[in-house]
Length: 255
Image 1 (cartoon, rainbow, N blue to C red):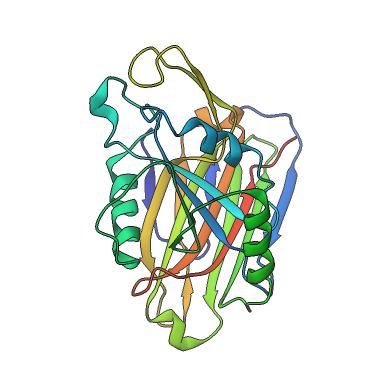
Image 2: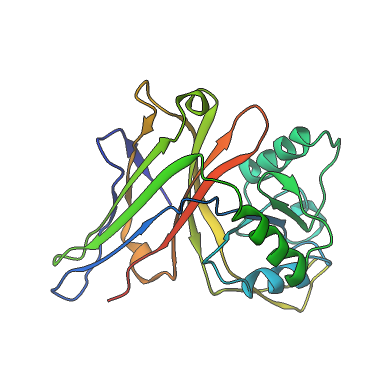
């Protein structure tokens, strides 16, 4: 899928598609407390990954922002994961370096830039509760409007709460998709039907904030996104420590 990017005053995301002749609008604004980012590094070529994928699918994206990155370093063992990208593997390696680890593995959950071992619902609730005691260090907003002609415009903003945080702030934008199904015909999961949610299909960044401690970007997507069950995520990450300052997700509007 080819995507053209250009700088603009606000972030806008256009999906050219035939839609009913009326407008729908939805919006989201980041909380005063930190909403943690939960990353899953997974692969359809990994026999131990399906349980992690299923657990990820069961997470409600209200007090946590889930994203599943499919890595490509298992593609050589017989099955090429169609959702995998080398840039996702690179991100995992950089995350490992932040934590001082010399290796990567799957499935791996990462919570707010740190390895999240022993994942289960109880520990997830504990992590979310802990994050709710941490004030947000970035203000994020997303607003999506489905126009009468079918275009969807997504406007976003990001601003550091403290000017000192803006210096090392990297902004990332992910487009994710839900309800994906693969019939695996080779490799460790041969014969399995795998289901995935929160799968990162496109990933943009790192972008830096401007001298005014703000960020904006514009994207245009092709029409095939019109029927996809998914949305957009924006998050801010400290480039020196890997810490997540804030995250925000907005599902694409449904008419």
